[in-house]
Image (cartoon, rainbow, N blue to C red):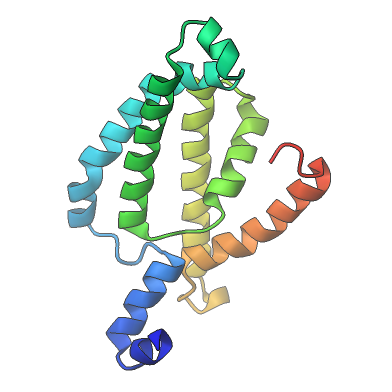
Length: 171
């Protein structure tokens, strides 16, 4: 039924495709202006939660032993995740594999210090998406391939390689 409704109009098809694959072709200055407060708030909350997340990575008992309010730390981390993820999806749609692949790339670069890991993952994720968007706009793909499709083409094999290399232990 959804496919039938989507095929009835070109605009419906484009909207459906955006919300299934994600992409950057609809990002405007107005959409960025509307969302920047949420990105800023999410980044500030994530920065505040960084040390708490490092403590939580040791385990809840160890974090409690270090004086961390575990429930508050989880709430703060969850708030950062909600602000950043929802803002990003509102802007570019659901782009697959960024959240699966980029943290592993960043962890290989800076290990497990959350104060450095999160910004590094942000830079790596942005670079991956810029490269995917540029490649999708290149003549090689006809100039119309969405960044979400290319990130899946890149991310799928990388995820398989990671699982095979680690046996799934660190994923």
